[in-house]
Length: 246
Ligand SMILES: Cc1cc2nc3c(=O)[nH]c(=O)nc-3n(C[C@H](O)[C@H](O)[C@H](O)COP(=O)(O)O)c2cc1C
Image (tube, rainbow, N blue to C red):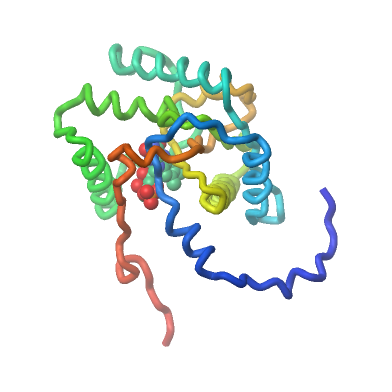
């Protein structure tokens, strides 16, 4: 790493704001991919672009595992099997726990309402009714097949890092997903892998000194799948912005 001066930087302007906006707004969570491989130089480029994400005092806490080919298939197979066992046998099936608390147990009402709307909206689109547990389980398992994407990206941080490193990893991932759009790729961030974190770490070769922050499916969209028509929507600004002026 070279620390230095970039004289041209203050002069650089984004000439085409629309492209940036399109990259941002065309990103959404794609949950069905075609198996078309993503060339390694392209993955490398996306990771370079993502690494332009900021981090407090430039600590760049992200450690990234790119999982493709046979390694991808073995990971999916092992985690799917663990997911299946847990479904059949319940909590006693294994002792795998997430590396950090992602979702609360005591939910703020408005966030829980949005979470439920999202879940039922997605299931509704797939024709899955309340109580159809097997169908829900099968859909959830798609996570552990990377939604058929050929590339899995796993971000870890050193266990000693503070919560800021999780925030910074999120910035890295957002940059990666935006860069992916610029190159015709889609993605889905996946906290689902966290439920099997120790197994994922073993499969990707991460150590126990690392925390699995998040997985990400990356590839080319299968536009023929109706799940990809799902629009999660957003609440309007009035619901989350406070203007402190006078
Ligand atoms: C950190 C993170 C983890 C997520 N984990 C999952 C996941 O495990 N499985 C999944 O299908 N979607 C997952 N999502 C996608 C969200 O459900 C999605 O971002 C949200 O509903 C908004 O929809 P959009 O991404 O299509 O705009 C995750 C998103 C984020 C940011």
